[in-house]
Length: 182
Image (tube, rainbow, N blue to C red):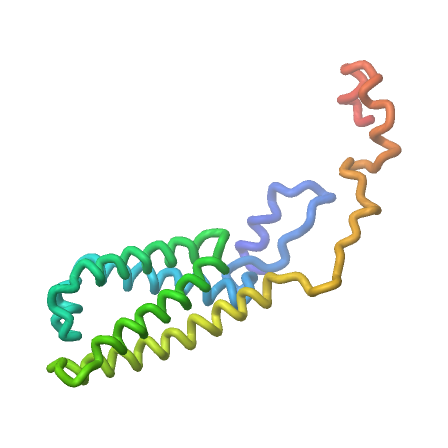
């Protein structure tokens, strides 16, 4: 057992579960990938918000800086959602955002654009990232979805730590007898 695992078990009562392994590898691979894609979205969105003129110049889209800023805000929103408890929504929003990016790049990839080669490079990069986003969103959805037809059975649970028999009549007992391990 490593140091962190021992330290996390110090304040535990004898009946509590024991931490056997801790750290990022405890998370499923789909969650780690969602986190990585979330950070990537935040970084890409920050670049799109901070330097839209450079991006539009690179792609031959001068005059469309506000569109790039809007795409940057969308990326940041998707990144924040991917890093939250709603990872699945963030990942799928990245996939749909990638589709919008591809449509935009296809519209810009015309004969009259002097930066057509740059647009082609960007298009290849976005398609590659779309495949990664799609795989990540699918993996996260599959990892965290219940199997169809499988119902969880909670009929044996009472909600009381000592079971139902130990809870019966506790409200009728005097408060000074409740703290005496009853």
